[in-house]
Length: 216
Ligand SMILES: Nc1ncnc2c1ncn2[C@@H]1O[C@H](COP(=O)(O)OP(=O)(O)O)[C@@H](O)[C@H]1O
Ligand SMILES: Cc1cn([C@H]2C[C@H](O)[C@@H](COP(=O)(O)O)O2)c(=O)[nH]c1=O
Image 1: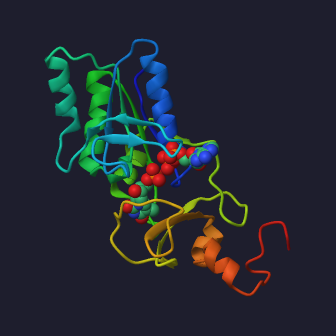
Image 2: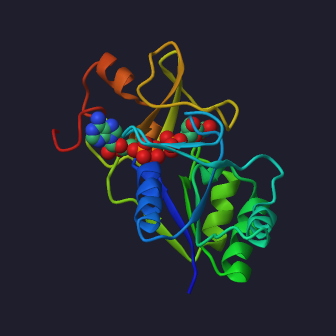
Image 3: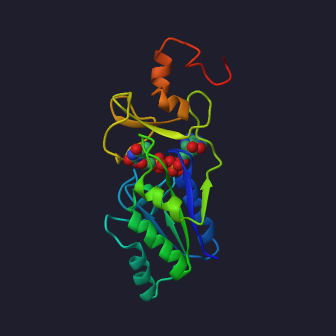
C-alpha cells in the first residue's frame, strides 16, 4: 500500500541526508521521483544536506497545488513513482492534504521530512497536518544532542548569541552560525525551558542546575 510517511526530528538530525538516500536508492533501481522542497538554505529549487550533497528539486511555492502539479506531470507522460518533500514544515496544511490525495488517488508513496516544532516549541502548521494525516511517523535514529549530552528534542533560535522565544515563525537559517547572526541550536527540553544554550551555560556560574547530564 502506498503511504504518507513523516520523518520528523530536530534541525541537524539528518533528515535531508535520509531524503537524498531514499531518492538515490530508488533511482538506482530505475524509479523516478519528484522532489519538492521549500526554502532550503542552499537556495530555491535545491535539497541540500550538511554532508555536502545537494540535488535539484521543485520549489513548493505558496499556493502551489502539489497534487495538480503531479497530475499534470503524469498526464504529459512523465513517469512518477514516488514523491519526496523536504522542509515539509513550511508547507501549508492544504498542501499536506494534497499530498495525502497523491497517496490515496495517485497511488504514490510520499516521504515527507521536517521539523515538528519551531523555536517557541509550537507545531508548524504543516507538521501539525502531517501528524494528523500521516500513515506513519518516523523519528530519525541519529540523535542530535544537546550541549549537556542528552538527546536534543527542541530547536532554539538565537539572535546575537542570545536565545529568543519571540519572533517570526519562519526565518531560514542554520546551526553553528556566528553569534552576531540569527542562528539555531538544538537543545533538550530541560535546557530549552531554561533558555540555556551552550554559550550561556558556559558563561554561567557552574551550579547543579547546569551541570551536564550524569555529572552531578
Ligand atoms: N563533517 C561531518 N561528518 C559527519 N557527519 C556530519 C558532518 N557534518 C554533518 N554531519 C551529519 O549530518 C547531520 C545533518 O544532516 P542534514 O541532513 O543536513 O540534517 P537535517 O536535514 O535534519 O537538518 C548531522 O546530524 C550529522 O550527523
Ligand atoms: C526552529 C526553526 C527553524 N526554522 C528554519 C531554519 C532552517 O532553515 C529550517 C530547518 O532546516 P533543517 O534542514 O531541519 O535544519 O527551518 C524556522 O524557520 N523557524 C524555526 O522556528
